[in-house]
Image (spheres, rainbow, N blue to C red):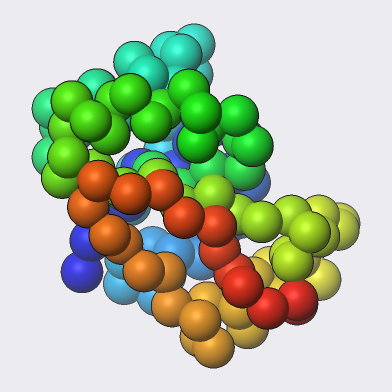
Length: 120
């Protein structure tokens, strides 16, 4: 299973869910990387052995893409908030879980992608 870095803009409850489901994950905050730019975050994550960054930052695809050229083993997965709208509390986690079980995260080295592709 891929080692996933959870960006600072992704809820802690999502991190907790991924870990509970057996994903190897750490948060940017845990690593002290809250203030890094997107490109710096790709670099730091790659050097620490992460395979992917899970983010909700729509600008990450543009800002982080240069980092993917430098670290082609990395992948950026953008949570598509049009398909998985932000709502409060347990409802969001339930929908996130449903999306994850129906559409597992696909990690493609050197690429960025949006997830999920269906609305939840």
